[in-house]
Image 1: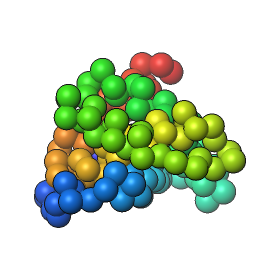
Image 2: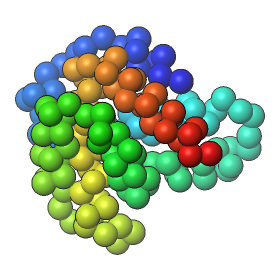
Image 3: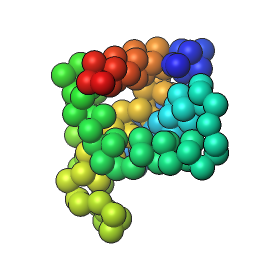
Length: 135
């Protein structure tokens, strides 16, 4: 389900963006990915919405980060650290540590989407494999 990401070419200069800007972009990319995944099966729109929300909230993103951390390069780990350290003022629905990890995940997704979409697709495919192994 990552073909749409693989089809992207590198664009922009993510190195010029701050971590929270990358996280903002990464959040959008992650949600789009989840929406496309869940649209594969016919469902009512309310069920689709619930399924996607379950995947895009902070705790789910923090869990996604912990699943892919062993596969991250040193540079990607540095990106995650920058994102984690820039996360301030978590929403009431999340604790600070979870919010920081979610922001770290979003930062990686945003940077890779702009700079290396094929690597992003590889990591998202890895997440999918991990999820399938758990079920």
